[in-house]
Every structure is written in structure tokens, then in C-alpha cells.
Length: 55
Image (cartoon, rainbow, N blue to C red):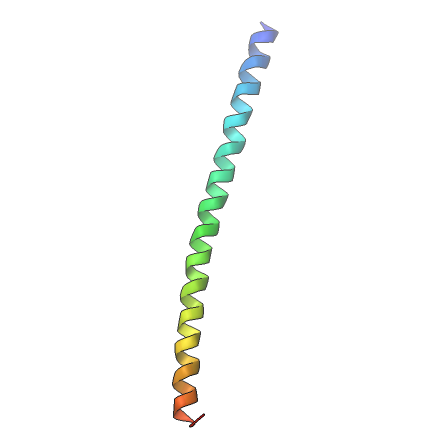
């Protein structure tokens, strides 16, 4: 009985940790998209201001 529980626990732990890794990767991808959008916005603002002040 204990051997069966141990086997189930070992098999289940791999699934638990792999799910968290996938969720963390998805969160990183979303954060990267937001950061790229912010960088693009700042570049546009910088270029606009540079033209406005004649640089």
C-alpha cells in the first residue's frame, strides 16, 4: 500500500512542477510583450521630441 502511494506521489510531483514552469514561462512571455510595446512607445516619443527641438 505504501509503495503504491509512493509511486503515485513521485509521478504526481513531476506534473505539479512542470505545470508551474509552463505558467511562469507564459507570464514571462506576456511581460516581454508589454516591455517591447513600452520600448516602441518610448522610441516614437523620443523621435518626435528630437524632431520638435530640431536635433
